[in-house]
Image (cartoon, rainbow, N blue to C red):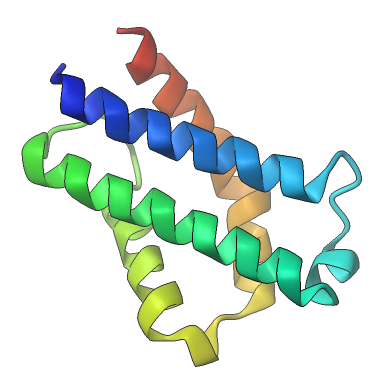
Length: 111
């Protein structure tokens, strides 16, 4: 695996870890929804994850990450559709997709 790909994978890992750090162990949706600073921080990390994935796909399109294209699409939605970002959708990404993505990324980083 190219060194550059590993760098971007590491960036994704750091952003996922940061999201989980921001939310803490409690991970309360209503606290998230009512805290603009927290929402913006999470959205920014999602943007970083999507941009790193976009760069990976350009140099290693066969990377073994199941929803790579959707991750990039999510980044685009958060950035360009900022006025339509749905907290429930973001929370679903946090709850359902990020735990799986971190496992995929960590496996690739071990290679």
